[in-house]
Length: 251
Image (cartoon, rainbow, N blue to C red):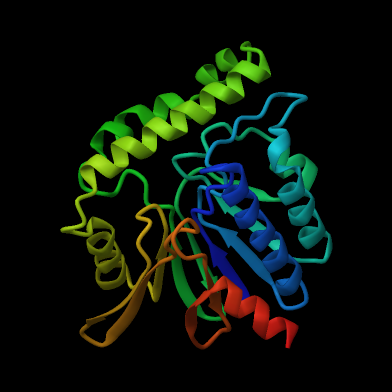
């Protein structure tokens, strides 16, 4: 089984709610371990993340430990960087064995062509972020930022994340879905069988028929409203509530 999750945004909201989401995530990682061939984290696992050469955000150590256990159990984990993930460096790859992708990726899974992307920079009105993204992700900017003391730097990353969400809410009026349009193009023009994204915080599953080809767009939603996990068994793609997946595994 191949699993997909996105926009968990650990660290967002009150400490109580953030811990509840983290506990749910850790339980999910535990129950999928026996069946998970690959886990794709499709961006924004954390609401903010910035790592230093010898320091990472301490609030997320439980999640890091759970990811390490899943990786040691034999699951391949691939992490597509999202718009809240610009502070990654090499901790995930060197310490956890998790592959980081700074661009969209294509994969053939059980004979089906997948296009997997977080979705940032593709939403209408996202042009401002598209301009600043290369700066946020540049090596020079990250090196300079690491001169700031970690207590201050991580606090600034948290504040920047909050401001980013406010801007997103201002332009996302819910009247159109440019990610859906992008997905249709990847399916009809490039022949993708599945296009999987996040970022929009709005779950979706829509099939497009393009002549003889049929493909499906999936948006994984977000964990603040309804925690969902995508699952592909080689024949069909399911988008299921996390609580249901956990309950089924327990039974």
